[in-house]
Image 1: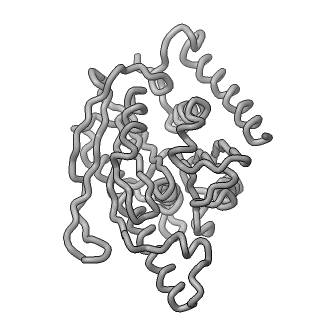
Image 2 (image 1 turned 90 degrees about the horizontal axis):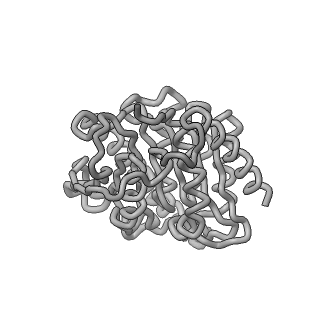
Image 3 (image 1 turned 135 degrees about the vertical axis):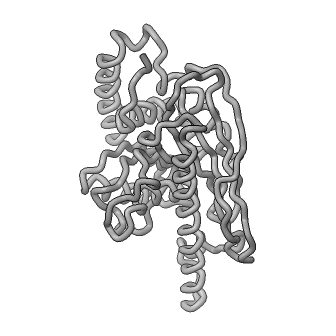
Length: 302
């Protein structure tokens, strides 16, 4: 219970800080970026990249669904790019549609993206060490690494695409976050922690201001450094798909470099990713909205 108690204390302090700086009392007026201030959203779909299929090598178009708050007149809005789960082998961007739409109702422009998949990968078997033949295990490990890297690169491409089309989308390129569920959370973590190749500065087109991870993990902790984006993590102790120990290690390594983190840990539960988030959504959203408010340096429109 200690992590959750610590979360509540930290969040309470942040709530007070936001309320004092923005409103005389939080209850007097709904806050953009925190409350659902818009009643509806509009959805459009665009291609953000043409790449090659991981297995066939054929050209492959990748699309994103874009959600915007209906009737919003603000010239520059912050962005959240959402990435779906599916073990890097299946899944679809539509699975993050309801999440993206709800966050758009807070005043964000949100994207739910597609990325390259490898339907035949055996990443779960590699994780569990259930492939007995060493040569076969090495082959499957390399295949899994390829799929994870492709997903990260496609997510980075979507961030660059947002910046390229910022004027048309009416977005603020200095305020971009990335979030995801399961494999999408792993990809989001990789965007926030691996865009700075070889420990160098993060390229401007790939830089994000925060990461929201539903059962996420960094499999290569050597890639974590002081240049990484602030990280908010949701994880359960008996998650059978993304190990709790890896989620915790990811957060702890980020903390060791002074990176801001927020953790919602449920050590006695087994929920995974989007299901875990939905089960605790009221609590998680309360933390995440204020986490983004602080780390994307948001403010209320005049």
